Image 1 (cartoon, rainbow, N blue to C red):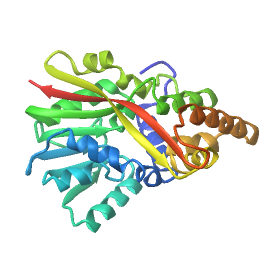
Image 2 (cartoon, rainbow, N blue to C red; image 1 turned 90 degrees about the vertical axis):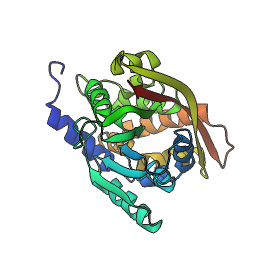
Image 3 (tube, one colour; image 1 turned 45 degrees about the horizontal axis):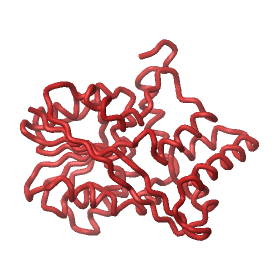
Image 4 (cartoon, rainbow, N blue to C red; image 1 turned 180 degrees about the vertical axis):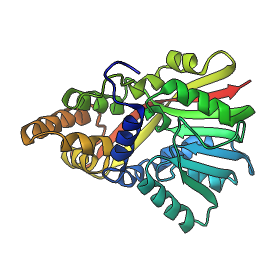
Length: 271
């Protein structure tokens, strides 16, 4: 860890607090189709043992269970897990949800046929540790599947704006590096087969641009927390910069906001 960086446990507590802020379930409901499509591309078979790392409110866990997979799911945010449990119960899906850390997973070596993480494990502070844990709990042969934010994407642009107002802590490794294929290959090492593709997560929001920014500010934990750390003048400036980013990516009209967010889908097959 870089000199001057906060202790690891402090970083982890900060991450937990951040993702518990707001209500990400209100964001995830507009991304459910992307979760279903992600699962469709995995070719899951009934009975497959699947681990969802950073499951959030269940956008990947639920469609995997609908395929007949035996799903276990972890997340650092108990409030998101509670929503996932409620959704699974409503569909009578048998999914084991538990609080857990992508860097220290409480599972045996090779326990799962498929290990997946969509826009989640990329936020853990030690990417090398994440890669080694994903590899450890996946059987040989098996599949590790990730959906990773690309550096050129809409979400990356939002992160860049936020970082100008609320700089990350010393030693922070940008999560968008997981969206660089060369970095992914370096992190997983030589003893794997890796396939990547660019996919689109289409966010279709029944809001004006200003309403979309307000919705994001209220419900996305990192954005909610960033605004909370600023005085009124800087909040107004950050809001204006967000409006600029949203308008650059918007494919909708004045009453309807549509953003197509590119991401790198990664399929890793341990040998």
